[in-house]
Amino acid sequence: MCRGISVHRGLNPWLLSVCAALWLALSALAFPVDAEAQPFWQQGRQNPLSTQPAPPNFTELAKALQPAVVNISTKQQEVRPSEDSPMEFFERFFGGPGRRRRRRPGQGSGFIISQDGYIVTNYHVIEDAADIKVTLTTRQQFNAKLIGGDAKTDLALLKIEADEQLPTVPAGNSDQLEVGEWVMAIGNPFGLGHTVTTGIVSAKGRTIGAGPYDDFIQTDASINPGNSGGPLFNMRGEVIGINTAIVPQGQGIGFAIPSNMTLNILRQLSGEGKVTRGWLGVAIQQLSPELMQAFKLENNNGALIADVIADSPAKKAGLKRGDIIVGFNGEKVQESSELPRLVATMPPGTSATVDIIREGKTLSVPVILGTLEEDDTQAVAKAKPSDVEVSLGLRVEPITPDIATSLKLENTDGVVVSGVDANGPAAEAGLRRGDVVREINRLPISDLDDYETITSNLRTDTTVLLLLVERRGSNLYVALKPEEAG
Image 1 (tube, rainbow, N blue to C red):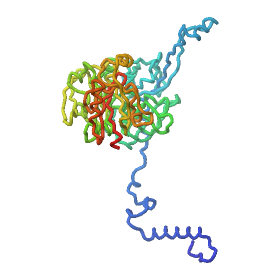
Image 2 (image 1 turned 120 degrees about the vertical axis):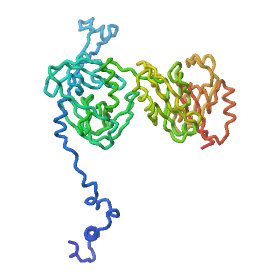
Image 3 (image 1 turned 30 degrees about the horizontal axis):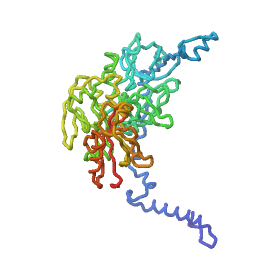
Image 4 (image 1 turned 30 degrees about the vertical axis):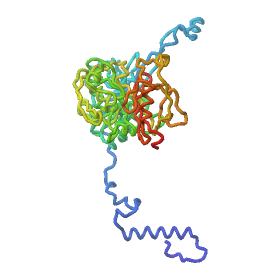
């Protein structure tokens, strides 16, 4: 190779560098060194991970599971414009068809969970459907009856009547699912018929803003329109998720409802056709680093109570605004989003224990859960947290009767924010004109005099101020950093 090339004037420097690189590579093979000291690209053959088995063979698994996965087609009714609309008048005047309903077709997936014909799918697949048809892999088609649905978790239970026992799939334990584990999705994407896709679990506990009980499994197994309601299997052939959402602008990003979340929901739907949830009655927010500092906490685990609803179970149990819920009935609460899920899984009338931090002390408070009404948005409402790196750049004024009427305030204690500097730190904090400041550093404010007294006594080295603010009927805490503190 390069050994026969003599060095002389005019030899291409590039050729010399190539020869040198080849010589170094041959030397490394002749005189190996410790694998830990070798560059990454030289360790491939010695890497113990390279001896791991290839991805599993999904063939037999797909054959066994596909018969229990079904196609769901719907016809949804859409109402034409009302008789008072210009279009309705135009159609009737010129002999048009007049007011009527038009049926819009839809496609989705589902899976059989009992031999007598109970089928699970997504609620959004059958929502407002006039007709629901289920097609098996054998091409048998059945009219399906809606047993019950739950929009908040996007689950629905259907029933078909067949002459023979139907194939089913078993439920798996989604809590035991590990990130990186192989999974397989079966469904009916784009209405093309049954297809199988595979991938791994990318993440768990994802919150995507779909509802108050978000706790999704994220997977890179291809989930497309029409897969909704289909099962996500582990390698034991158990359903560990129900495929329900995708990120349209991202490839390989799909979300599934964990199977363990569905069990109690399906149990209630099969018995009563609806879901009844426990209710605590608090508005909560996530602890920001500033709020953590203001409450003198060691970490930001937990859900901060921003408000306690009157006559709620929380109020009767003695929970207070400013308490930090760190546990519920033996389960730790690390993120505020976890609390609504934990409460909702328990039936009304259940006795539970709420672990809180109050004024630096840990307490356990017994509570008897109430019933969450479907239109009770306060029960799961979350107060909006403040932005980070905030300060006291705001102007306030007294709450006059006119202001109280304009803001629909029942409680006139406090001061109202009359303005914020658009280029200052208050605007960055998210404070708005019309916000009502009720407390500063846990001290109540009844009027402008209280506000001025408290603020005038603040030290210049104060690192964080804690404000309780009312906005549009909901309370939230805001942690502020004065400019003097940097």
